[in-house]
Each structure stands twice: as C-alpha cells, then as structure tokens.
Length: 126
Image 1: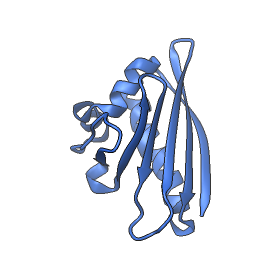
Image 2: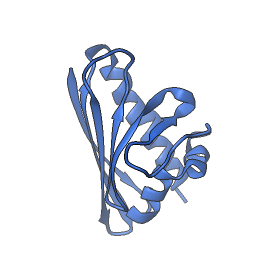
Image 3: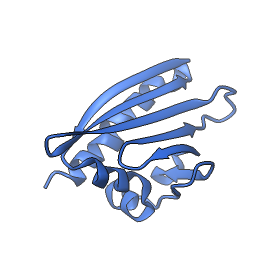
Image 4: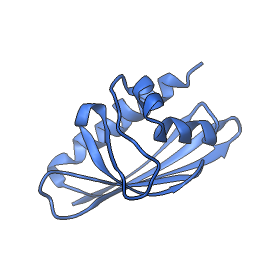
C-alpha cells in the first residue's frame, strides 16, 4: 500500500472550486460524465463513468473534502483528503490519498494529475 501527496493550483476561489467538486451537475461539466455525488457524510459517490467510486466521509465547505475510495476487494480503506486554501485569486489544493494498492498507484497518480486536476484547470482557465 502506498500514499500519494500532490499539490495543485486552480484558477478560481476555494468556494467555487468546492462547489465544482460536490455538485453533480458541475462535476459532469468538467468531467464530461454523469456523476453521483451528495454532500452528505456516509453517502456514496461515483465519478468518471464509474472509474472512481466510494463513500463521502467529511465536508468542511470551501475548505476540505474527505472520501473513501474503493478498489475492488482490497481490505484497506483508501482515504482521499482534499484541502482547499486561498492563494490570491486562486486555490491551492493539497491532495493526500492513503492505502493505495501498489498495482494501482501509477494509475491513481496519473488520474489525479492528467484527468481530474487537468480537467479542473481547463474548466477554470478563463
């Protein structure tokens, strides 16, 4: 099991980025896929046509999202924490994901950098 820590800068305010991460209709706009998402701890979520599924754990509006991601039959919980903080007119996103199965690590890292965060950067590039 591995741990991933990455930092990104997104060209929008934390409040707006937070909404883009928790609102199904907006997730669909920046991913291109329907999303199941509810800002309720304990609710299930699904992004990217089922490629990312799990359970929502905790929300602090405009500041933090914590989720449990599922990896098939792996017994360990993979916990994703996104911390959002303002930096001028942008948002710094601190990502931490724990207990990533070794075979999935490079795909997860690629997905965060080249799919999820790249899509958000493009969405907020104006």
